[in-house]
Image 1 (cartoon, helix red, strand yellow):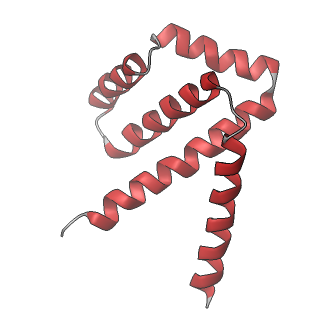
Image 2 (cartoon, helix red, strand yellow):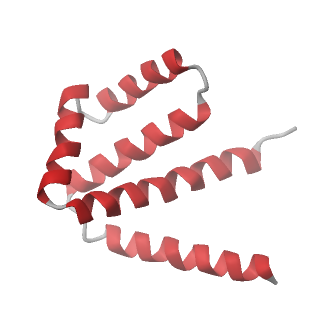
Length: 108
C-alpha cells in the first residue's frame, strides 16, 4: 500500500514538473537538459577526471562552453532564484528517472 501511495505521489510530482516545463523558454529547456545530463554523468562516473571530461563534452554538445554555462547559471541565480530552483529540481527528477531506468534495465 505504501508503494502505491509513493508511486502516486511521485507521478503527481512528475506531472507537475512536466506541466510547468511547458512554460519554459528554449533557453530554460537547454539549460535544464544540460544540467540533467551533468547530474547523470556525475552519478554514473565515479572517477572524477573521467566525469569532468564527460561533463565538458555534455556542456559542449549542448552549445555551451564551460564559461557560458557558468554564466547562465549565475544569470538565473541573480535574476530569479525561483526559476533556477525549479530548473534544478526538474533536472534532479529527470536525472533520477534516467538513472532508475538504467538500473531497472540492467541485467545482473
